[in-house]
Length: 429
Image (spheres, rainbow, N blue to C red):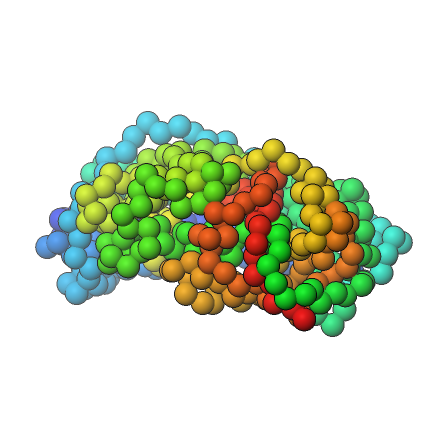
């Protein structure tokens, strides 16, 4: 890598080398039967160069010819994006405990045996399709640049995911655990899945109208993803974001606070530097409903006259860095999920939505089908919702929040509590 960087630096004004390696393994059960036990290895190198005010990128999985890779990057820069940035010199960052060597001791044989035990447990206590997945990996990334930065990290992850699927649908209920090494999906979690699955055997089409809706597990993404798009520095630079001019103003209920914490080792994207070598930081996007900040990479921080926040991440080694939030946390509130359900006279609790990526996302509009959700009456779950649509605007919906759950669901790169939103438009009968 050092030789590649030196070669590129001799021919370009600035350069950085980003590399990633990962070993992935998985075991999966579908409808209670072993379906996969596989492994994969991946490695990639990206060379970014800046020459005459333009950036170019070339990538490879086999560094056989350094000069050829440099030539490709320079050719890309000749017609590349205009930039006016200085690559950072970053040193002395904290070493975060993102790697657990115990991950290397995990075996497929152990997971298959544990999976069969969990499958048998579900069969003994209920009926229905049960899917189970184990995914575990270890690897690392590194970054060197012509300013003298030389950074690396090693990380491991383990995820176990159990799902009950309702007959005749692609929708279901799920629970999971994540860790840096092996973690169990315990019987208490399975019991909760089985009980909800039992309640879901009764199907209910709700009446059309406005009612309170509890967005739980993945469901809040349908709302938060719209804020993420509007908070993109690209949309600020192009002057199309609805958040322009709203710094310091309330955009959500005061019960909603959104921040990022890249140093939270419980979360999957814990890291001290981004894909450009800028130190990451913990800060708030929304504080008690008030809009505070957007994430920036080097390029758009310069274009907007802002300070880079260390959010220039790469989806993989084939992509240029772009500004993305990392380890996002929605602050928990003061109600448990059972308390929130008990408070409903009539309403819904929604776990998954369909079509969440459709509609005018930038403006905050949504029109989504309920994948998995339940109808609540007088504080009790009466059955599973079917043929139901939720419509509205994320900013309006999150301005009318009745309660926020007192604990968060750790989804890996997000920690999200359930959110009770009042007066959501529901289309049913």
